[in-house]
Amino acid sequence: MVMNGQSSGAKLPESDREDMEIFLDRIHQLMPVLGADALLPIGQAPEGQAEKRLLFCEIKGLKATGHLTPNGLVVLTGSQAVLKERASAHQWPYTLATRNKLIEDGTLVQDGDHLKFTRDAEFSSPSAAATVVHGGSANGLLAWKDKDGKTLKELEAV
Image 1 (cartoon, rainbow, N blue to C red):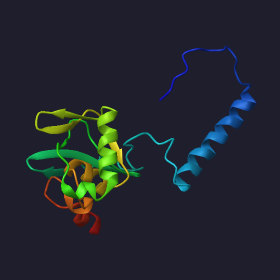
Image 2: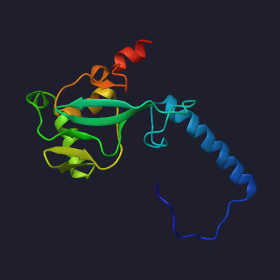
Image 3: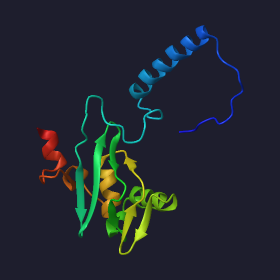
Image 4: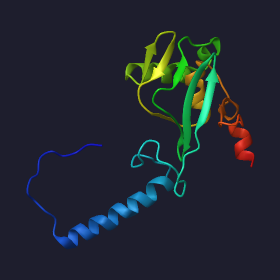
Protein backbone atom coordinates (compact mmCIF):
# COMPACT_ATOMS: atom_id res chain seq x y z
CA MET A 1 0.00 0.00 0.00
CA VAL A 2 1.30 3.44 -0.89
CA MET A 3 0.81 6.14 1.70
CA ASN A 4 1.11 9.83 0.94
CA GLY A 5 3.37 11.28 3.61
CA GLN A 6 2.74 14.91 2.65
CA SER A 7 -0.50 16.74 3.15
CA SER A 8 -1.36 19.63 0.90
CA GLY A 9 -3.92 20.89 3.37
CA ALA A 10 -6.63 20.77 0.68
CA LYS A 11 -9.84 19.03 1.59
CA LEU A 12 -12.72 18.02 -0.60
CA PRO A 13 -16.05 19.63 0.14
CA GLU A 14 -18.40 17.20 1.85
CA SER A 15 -20.61 16.82 -1.24
CA ASP A 16 -17.57 15.95 -3.43
CA ARG A 17 -16.33 13.52 -0.79
CA GLU A 18 -19.70 11.73 -0.84
CA ASP A 19 -19.57 11.52 -4.65
CA MET A 20 -16.06 10.06 -4.41
CA GLU A 21 -17.20 7.43 -1.89
CA ILE A 22 -20.01 6.37 -4.24
CA PHE A 23 -17.52 6.20 -7.13
CA LEU A 24 -15.10 4.07 -5.08
CA ASP A 25 -17.93 1.73 -4.00
CA ARG A 26 -18.83 1.20 -7.67
CA ILE A 27 -15.20 0.52 -8.57
CA HIS A 28 -14.94 -2.08 -5.79
CA GLN A 29 -18.08 -3.76 -7.17
CA LEU A 30 -16.99 -3.71 -10.82
CA MET A 31 -13.35 -4.77 -10.53
CA PRO A 32 -14.03 -8.41 -9.47
CA VAL A 33 -16.72 -8.75 -12.16
CA LEU A 34 -14.19 -7.67 -14.78
CA GLY A 35 -11.62 -10.11 -13.42
CA ALA A 36 -9.29 -7.39 -12.12
CA ASP A 37 -7.86 -7.90 -8.66
CA ALA A 38 -5.82 -4.72 -8.28
CA LEU A 39 -7.78 -3.55 -5.25
CA LEU A 40 -7.90 -6.92 -3.49
CA PRO A 41 -5.29 -7.45 -0.77
CA ILE A 42 -3.05 -10.48 -1.28
CA GLY A 43 -4.45 -13.53 0.42
CA GLN A 44 -7.81 -12.05 1.33
CA ALA A 45 -10.20 -14.78 2.43
CA PRO A 46 -13.44 -15.19 0.49
CA GLU A 47 -16.36 -13.29 2.01
CA GLY A 48 -18.02 -15.21 4.80
CA GLN A 49 -15.03 -17.49 5.32
CA ALA A 50 -13.96 -16.73 8.86
CA GLU A 51 -11.33 -19.44 9.06
CA LYS A 52 -8.93 -20.28 6.23
CA ARG A 53 -8.48 -23.99 5.56
CA LEU A 54 -4.77 -24.66 5.48
CA LEU A 55 -3.49 -26.85 2.67
CA PHE A 56 -0.13 -28.60 2.44
CA CYS A 57 2.05 -29.55 -0.52
CA GLU A 58 4.88 -31.98 0.20
CA ILE A 59 7.73 -33.25 -1.95
CA LYS A 60 11.05 -34.88 -1.03
CA GLY A 61 10.58 -34.14 2.67
CA LEU A 62 9.86 -30.46 2.01
CA LYS A 63 6.56 -28.87 3.01
CA ALA A 64 4.70 -25.82 1.73
CA THR A 65 1.63 -24.42 3.45
CA GLY A 66 -1.06 -22.35 1.78
CA HIS A 67 -4.74 -21.52 1.54
CA LEU A 68 -7.22 -20.79 -1.21
CA THR A 69 -8.18 -17.22 -2.09
CA PRO A 70 -10.75 -15.80 -4.51
CA ASN A 71 -7.91 -15.44 -7.03
CA GLY A 72 -6.10 -18.77 -6.58
CA LEU A 73 -3.82 -19.91 -3.78
CA VAL A 74 -1.43 -18.16 -1.39
CA VAL A 75 1.72 -19.99 -0.33
CA LEU A 76 2.63 -18.81 3.16
CA THR A 77 5.89 -17.42 4.52
CA GLY A 78 8.27 -20.16 5.66
CA SER A 79 7.05 -22.69 3.10
CA GLN A 80 9.68 -24.77 1.34
CA ALA A 81 10.27 -25.57 -2.33
CA VAL A 82 12.76 -27.82 -4.13
CA LEU A 83 16.04 -26.18 -5.07
CA LYS A 84 16.56 -27.84 -8.47
CA GLU A 85 13.95 -27.77 -11.20
CA ARG A 86 12.83 -31.07 -12.68
CA ALA A 87 13.14 -31.82 -16.40
CA SER A 88 9.42 -31.07 -16.85
CA ALA A 89 10.06 -27.44 -15.85
CA HIS A 90 11.88 -26.85 -19.11
CA GLN A 91 8.81 -27.95 -21.12
CA TRP A 92 6.68 -25.26 -19.47
CA PRO A 93 8.40 -21.84 -19.42
CA TYR A 94 5.86 -20.54 -16.87
CA THR A 95 7.42 -22.62 -14.10
CA LEU A 96 10.95 -21.37 -14.74
CA ALA A 97 9.84 -17.77 -15.27
CA THR A 98 7.78 -17.72 -12.08
CA ARG A 99 10.50 -19.32 -9.95
CA ASN A 100 13.13 -16.95 -11.36
CA LYS A 101 10.90 -13.93 -10.70
CA LEU A 102 10.32 -15.03 -7.11
CA ILE A 103 14.06 -15.58 -6.60
CA GLU A 104 14.90 -12.19 -8.12
CA ASP A 105 12.42 -10.29 -5.94
CA GLY A 106 13.57 -12.12 -2.79
CA THR A 107 10.35 -14.06 -2.19
CA LEU A 108 12.25 -17.36 -2.65
CA VAL A 109 15.72 -17.68 -1.13
CA GLN A 110 18.06 -20.63 -0.85
CA ASP A 111 18.02 -22.21 2.60
CA GLY A 112 20.49 -25.08 2.62
CA ASP A 113 19.36 -27.75 0.16
CA HIS A 114 16.00 -26.13 -0.65
CA LEU A 115 14.26 -22.82 -1.30
CA LYS A 116 12.23 -20.98 1.32
CA PHE A 117 9.41 -18.43 0.94
CA THR A 118 10.32 -15.19 2.76
CA ARG A 119 6.82 -13.77 2.38
CA ASP A 120 3.34 -14.85 1.31
CA ALA A 121 3.05 -15.34 -2.45
CA GLU A 122 -0.25 -15.53 -4.32
CA PHE A 123 -0.58 -17.73 -7.40
CA SER A 124 -3.35 -17.80 -9.99
CA SER A 125 -4.19 -21.44 -9.24
CA PRO A 126 -3.25 -24.34 -6.96
CA SER A 127 -1.36 -25.91 -9.90
CA ALA A 128 0.66 -22.74 -10.48
CA ALA A 129 1.71 -22.80 -6.82
CA ALA A 130 2.47 -26.54 -6.89
CA THR A 131 4.70 -26.23 -9.97
CA VAL A 132 6.86 -23.67 -8.16
CA VAL A 133 7.05 -25.81 -5.01
CA HIS A 134 7.76 -29.01 -6.97
CA GLY A 135 10.13 -27.35 -9.46
CA GLY A 136 8.22 -28.84 -12.39
CA SER A 137 4.79 -29.78 -13.63
CA ALA A 138 2.25 -30.67 -10.95
CA ASN A 139 -1.50 -31.02 -10.66
CA GLY A 140 -2.49 -28.68 -7.84
CA LEU A 141 -5.76 -30.50 -7.23
CA LEU A 142 -3.75 -33.59 -6.26
CA ALA A 143 -0.61 -31.96 -4.82
CA TRP A 144 -2.38 -29.80 -2.20
CA LYS A 145 -3.95 -31.68 0.72
CA ASP A 146 -5.61 -30.74 3.98
CA LYS A 147 -4.39 -31.82 7.42
CA ASP A 148 -6.28 -35.11 7.07
CA GLY A 149 -4.61 -35.98 3.76
CA LYS A 150 -7.62 -35.23 1.54
CA THR A 151 -6.62 -33.76 -1.79
CA LEU A 152 -8.03 -30.46 -2.97
CA LYS A 153 -9.88 -32.41 -5.68
CA GLU A 154 -11.58 -34.53 -2.99
CA LEU A 155 -12.42 -31.44 -0.93
CA GLU A 156 -13.95 -29.64 -3.92
CA ALA A 157 -16.06 -32.69 -4.79
CA VAL A 158 -17.88 -32.46 -1.46
